[in-house]
Length: 483
Ligand code: HEM
Image (cartoon, rainbow, N blue to C red; front, side):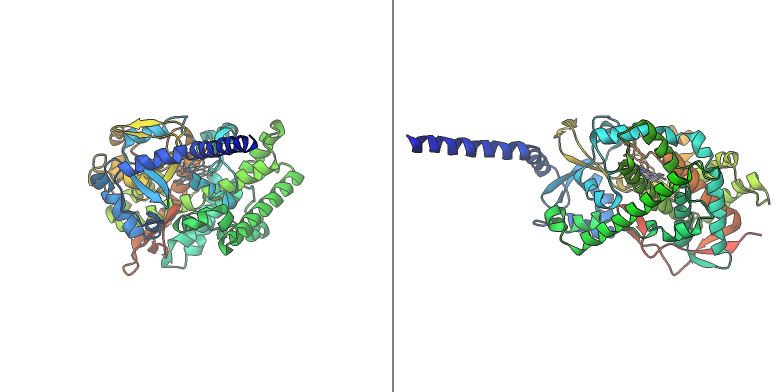
């Protein structure tokens, strides 16, 4: 009797465990079934397609051929995890345009250690609350107040270029962008040189792409024992402690009249009325903004300067626009001047089409969606590649050619709204995109007013991918002062 009861209990236990495993794995199983039906690059056992991430030329080859070879929805494998790529703007709109699919895929949780839990990597209620609280700050009127900071920083940093003729332009651009971020996000004024020198923000390294290439590093219990995890946590704690120190310093000194417009100040105001927006939230968000606004902007500026140097007639047209605005004056650039830089804005937009700073983004679907003959199940990790979509022939004629006229007012109207995604799109787009566009315009125009740019013949650019798109080894340009 006792043994029959025991057997029944065991059976119930086994069935319950199996059911739990099934419920837990259901979404993964459905994604695997879908992935097995889709075409995609040939995977390796265990690794899947992860090695592509470290090999940019293979990655771009796959990207360029993907639509023709695999169709508008295809799959890749991150080890045993299916990654479904969606290329067509109409399908992308169904995902990015919907407020139902705002959760990020597992890839973003790999960034938590580094950038903390801020807007970029959070999902669910916390993301929605923080986005609603922070969004008003990024309206255009507040951003106008930053124009002076952008100008002062660009013209201060440009001094390092006055004696050089052949330069790795990334060094100038990175210093400029970091200087601007210290001031506008953390409120560290131009005179606070000791604090700036102490800042750990320049040295960051995001490990997500390394972890994906070694899929056993995706297991937190394995990864946490590695040297990479140790150095990442050290870096994280330096960023956290530095930001906390600045927060305490600024809080103790009150609102200074010189530096009243900065994101930290705004976050302190939010916190006064929201107990959920505590110091930990402030620090995590500040770390996120400092990192989100760094490599992305620097890449966009550097690649724009590269394109202008590589296309002399386009550079000439951009310079004529500047000459029309400033004549021979070296007066500061103001908000109105920036608004008048229409052609330069087209050059920047076209650069971000060819070289989107964030070449891949991803989401985790919260419910099933139907794209043509495929049902993408809830829980599926969907990847969208602005780099690939921006080069589809159906949407861009001669897609590999640099042609700023694509972004003239009349041509812009013909473009599908989800065919151009440098800042993503929909409810979870880049919160800082207006800030970024003004900043990029300021740095590019300040440099172009002073210098004529050309390429260094023996130093071609070498594209690489590390969450953001970059030129490994930098971008070398020849600068000739304009008379
Ligand atoms: C050229 C410059 C920039 C580019 C190309 C860019 C691109 C993007 C993209 C594609 C996303 C969406 C990421 C995703 O869904 O995975 C994003 C999100 C974000 N960006 Fe930017 N960004 C730029 C500059 C900035 C700046 C200057 C800031 C802040 C000062 C900023 C702050 C953010 C934040 C906080 C998010 C997360 C928004 C959310 O999920 O609600 N970005 N950015």
